[in-house]
Image 1 (cartoon, rainbow, N blue to C red):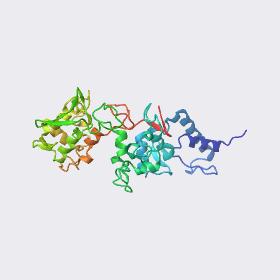
Image 2 (image 1 turned 180 degrees about the horizontal axis):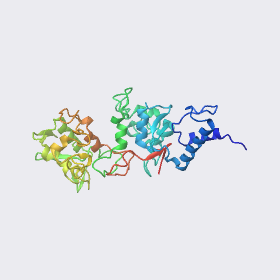
Image 3 (image 1 turned 90 degrees about the vertical axis):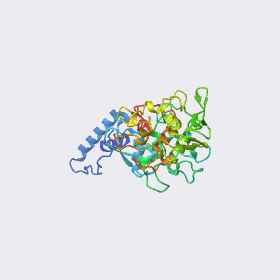
Image 4 (image 1 turned 120 degrees about the vertical axis):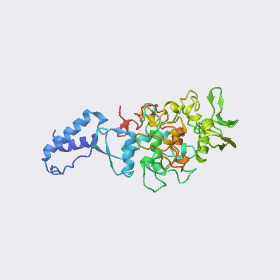
Length: 360
């Protein structure tokens, strides 16, 4: 039996990782003109054999980085897009083969993880956030399609039809950011999303507890307190109204960051990890004082710092709670539900994936 080694080499090569490689003409000539066709086929076969020997790790990339490459490539539905693999080489990907399985396949984000589409399966009230992650069209519609029509964009667009901005993508944040403080119990009903219930007694807003466990699902809650304080101009000394009564930053707001067990039973205080603006403090952030909160995060790596309360820059007083990074980190559960918390954040960009499968 005679086998056309040129055809087989190319077929094998393309089926492995289809990296971005020079094209071969039907005549056997190499488009770069440096070598003859036979020699090129030999080298193509070498690339394939190397790829096969390394299994699916050739062309593998962190899942969040793969989605970013797709978005930055214009989020094409059918055309291929380029990405740089974990090995530093250039590869081509396709939405249906590489991206969509990240949302429709169980066990891809971590062992035992549910598929995103198991909770976000169509644009009905029965689907969480009225969101459909089963198809290209569903992803483009975004979330909260019924409650906030025509929908909330997932890829950082200011509105539907606007340019993509992955750095401000809601999808990116939900896939990448751990909810703070670490260890929140999973609650798909999201009753605990606005933090513990609060009451005002003797001019102090306090967490409402049942035994030693905070309660949830009240109109007065911790996120509401932070929002009210921010909208009042984030005062340090002057009092502001919460629940119809005057409270202060020092006695009501600051304890949310400096007290153990305030967000849920056994929770660490925020300031136990974010205690000053040094490299030893996570995100070089200080949540132990008013001044520290105003300085923001990443003070050394991104000076003068990244604002926490939605300001346009450090020092500005144009607070915007709806755009607050603090709000997002305190409120949003990381997806997929059950992602293991890693304080080093090495799992922040998701697992290595290749052709819709997780690479061990």
